[in-house]
Image (cartoon, rainbow, N blue to C red):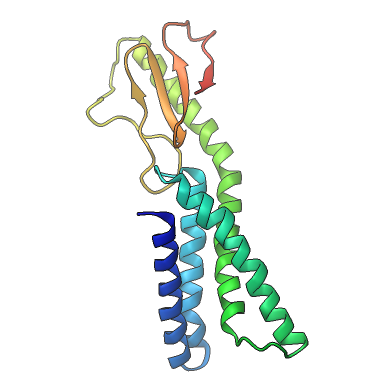
Length: 189
């Protein structure tokens, strides 16, 4: 799915949940948009940890669209709050809060990714040791998984000479298995 279509779907979902919020009374009115904000924060964190083959989603929605929405939606909320004119209603401010939740998730995910790569390299070192010892206990029909996210982390792959795992679209960490374990270093490709 192209990033523009996904962004349009997210805006339509926001509009539907905002309309639902208007029909609910009291504190229940905040529930639909709060749930959307939490879901987007978690999704942003997962995609920042590993983009799952969609770097365009992270770029255009996470790094371009969401900041623009936060800036202009927050500005529209601020001028309505402090000046009263132009009054664009409460929707730009709500949209800015939901986009800010997405940005917060991406920020947290970016920080967590460093630890994910290190944990995956440690796990890869253990797998490499077992491969060097004769592949004892490794079922490559169901390869071991990395630590790159909680939902569907990518698996390790090996061709017998190298062990590797993806850290993003087109970027792999690779370990040369022909080098003794004490001299082997992970390289970024």
